[in-house]
Length: 96
Length: 493
Image 1 (cartoon, each protein chain N blue to C red):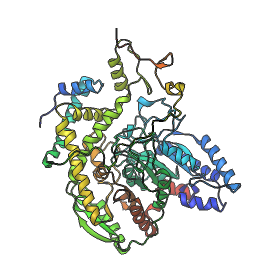
Image 2: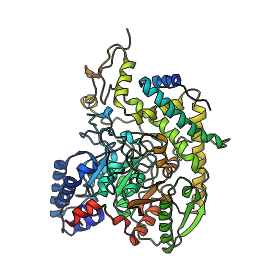
Image 3: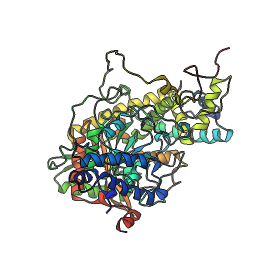
Image 4: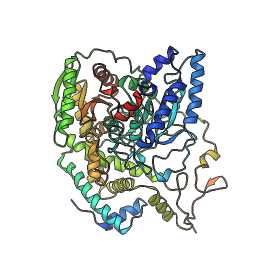
């Protein structure tokens, strides 16, 4: 099994939108490698022909009528936002 | 014994006969909280004034002879990951500090509709990731049987509240053992229902294919009473299942003769404490005397269930926790005006604790290109084999019995620095979530003064069977009635 490097961990941190100090990164790399080594135990299992399970019960998509029902008032929905402007969530600028 | 040490069904009897009123019970619980809470730390927030108002309203209904809810005037604690409109819900995380949900979880709505008196919000491991409450960003809860030890987790605060008489019952959530493991460590009864039986609407998601809400109580009868309220189809949860409504207390009195129980060898093997095994086997012998037939079975994928569980739960957690970005809710970092990604990163890095970050990293890694097939897909295939194996076993037996935990309550710091050792705490419970089965943990003895839990696993939607076995066991034993020393002292004072 391939070991993950600090560079790999830094890349994954970028995907997860997390930032780590150099010290944290070193510790985390060691921990992740130990955990992944434990995960590699699964390679002992022959899973040929076993479909992956995403849901434990035999439940199919459930549809309902598309009827209009009361929803959360706008002020309520915005109450927990960090910044609100003109009745909307405000985010930092993402385009020029 | 004080009123706060009684069960729901005992209090219901007293209320019905107008011998005791909810305000008196709340006063007793409040006294207990004032006495022990500073040492045990079961709660993140308490609302005793709100509870007093609810209790007085219940007093009035009882005095007026009105129809009573099943939980009328019963003081309960709820885990901090269950939303209640207008009450801060933090999941014991910095990133949700100040978050006040605008809506109420279905289970909370249901218990309120039955007259429950909500005392406050119970401590937990941050975002329900952990087995000891040590990963709570706020504080550790202490095990009332030995405050040097953890109460288990992640529903540790809920378990402590019930064990110490700081609540009559509590709600928790269980993704890999988070109700049953703290129930075992703290000497209470904890039920994880079948996946889909209880609505998860308003439960802050950890791993959506595994999470389930359930009760922590003083005995199996209370567990059945609460399940009657919690269960049921909810259009607000797409994984909620339409099943026939059942009275879960229906089969409690049933004789156990003719019931067949399987003992899986793999759950009594290496890594399981010898005293724990011996105690559970003693309980099984007692069940034999009650007429149960016991057969040895084999669940040979057991050793793969935990690593597969860790992969799947981390992957789902990593995805679920992507929503914490500091924009719509939650605690935001200082604004970075021209860089949205940097703002997200700062918010998340400041807001999440070390274990949550570790799991997000693991989850992101196992889902990333190049690792997906080797880890995530492999784990989901192993999950299929685990389910198949359980299904086959349930063709032969009515229930499976195992220890709930590999050891009794461990000390603070014993595992918190070693993620793999912490994950091992869920080795007997996580396979059950992987298969979506119901299971209950009940106290079945003590090892060196610490409670031991026995896990009874049932087939899908067969809660009545495991509750029946648990109830009959508790009818002839009194381990579930034992109370921790400091509480006993106060009780006799």
